[in-house]
Length: 446
Image 1 (cartoon, rainbow, N blue to C red):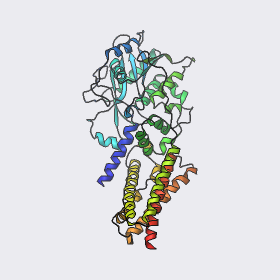
Image 2: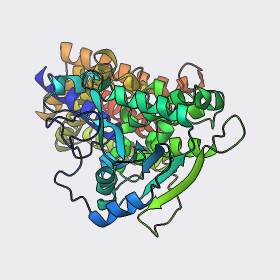
Image 3: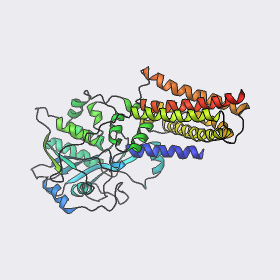
Image 4: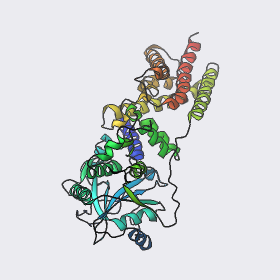
């Protein structure tokens, strides 16, 4: 059971850490809401402010009679935790320093921090910090920053500022984090919609590109194969629903595009100015694409399945190959079973909604655990008989049936998970492994 719990934690950490893209800047006790020293930066601690870049930021914020509102969007970075980008809202008063309202903080010292994280009950925090210092940190990482000045009138600006100031108060700053529905970007979207009295949501909630949460997760993780695989394996059916343009704004870059397209009641664009930092940087925005990995997954599945089947055929004639097949089968069965247990645990024992109803459990069946004694007997060169063989035979037949059903169920409307790649990869391996064990035992019995 300890091993099962450990594997559950590993898969939860992989999925959660990969998708969670909100970033926590350096703590700074500035602005209307004090930021305590217990807050930590999730990127690189001790980052230089970069005075020259800070001057560039300040130069881009002209002082007017009312506070200016800027939506600041940071492009995805090279590190895995930066792959989804980040954003913040900056309010620059007529006098004084601009304040960045950032919803990307969390506290490692929080009670039961790790347990909350694993169970999908993560608490993030909203803070108010010096905008120059905030933006300069992202520029020091070599990431471009887009700044959009929004044409909000006095009443809209006041509503927004009051909402943000209230949100960063110590008694209000914590919020229940969700990768897709309650993160750094969705919080800013909601705040802007409040300022616009619901006009932003009305404009976008009934329009769609036909994309899903999985699409955006795959697109932003595609450049790191291990991240892509970890995310895609752990995501369940809830992430395959078609999103509205409103929902898509959980990605910072998509919120930036929504604001650029949005027009007020008079038909005027809400974005009246856009800058990109550092000065002279390309204005071309990244639009991640989802790679087509189906041919690669299918080829890998056929190759691996063929290799397993060939080894099983050899094991029917040679005792040495029988031992090797027992070792390989035991390793694969263990990996399949514990991956299935981890996926099942994420669904049934956590609040990671994005991991619920995961059809990949059909491919990674926990029933493979029941076959382990049989593989151990093969490795030791012993015959399979009695209860060990009866249980193993049931387990492998059921595992093959589940994997075949995963493919056949694609025609059923309620099996709409985008996991065809995993089926193409795993079905040949599962079939070869299970059928190989049945054939090896049948050869012994005859």
